[in-house]
Amino acid sequence: MKSELKAFFKAFTYAFSGIVHGIKRERNIRFHLCAALTVLAFMGFYDLTAAEKCVIFLCIGGVISAELINTAVENAVDMYSKEKSPAAKDAKDCAAGAVLVMSVCAAVCGIMIFWDRAVFAEIWEYFACRPLAVFGAAVWAAVAFLFVFGIKKKK
Image 1 (cartoon, rainbow, N blue to C red):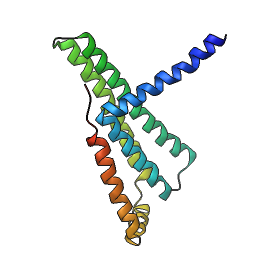
Image 2: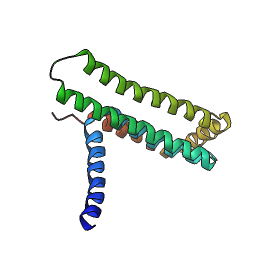
Image 3: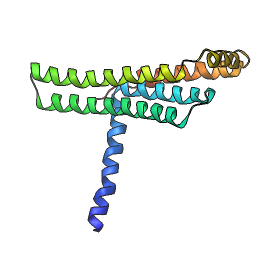
Image 4: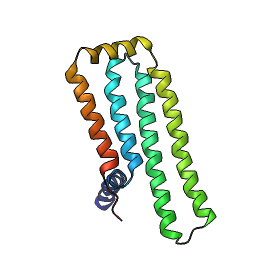
């Protein structure tokens, strides 16, 4: 019983390690994380229902999960397929396609939830009256850019 419980909790360590690996090595995961944090920050301008918030969190989780699965497929294919083969390419392309499908669906959900001209005007006013907020947004954009593109992949 004790060893089963230990193994159960050890699985969380492996899962967390996989997430960290993905963040360290995969630019697209870092991009999606920055996009997710930006969406979460702008949610404060909206009066969202619990269902809308759930959709947003499911979309964020779905896209990041799809990216992690894509990374796993690419790593497995690269490990077992030393020469270029059409099957290896197809497997990698299908995994990347799954990320694209999930990302497009998430973007459509985001547009449907967030497209509100009155709130756009409120956001514009908020930033127009607060130079420090504009500075903060610019700093966030720079930090996000460096986070996404500045981490070099180690082989």
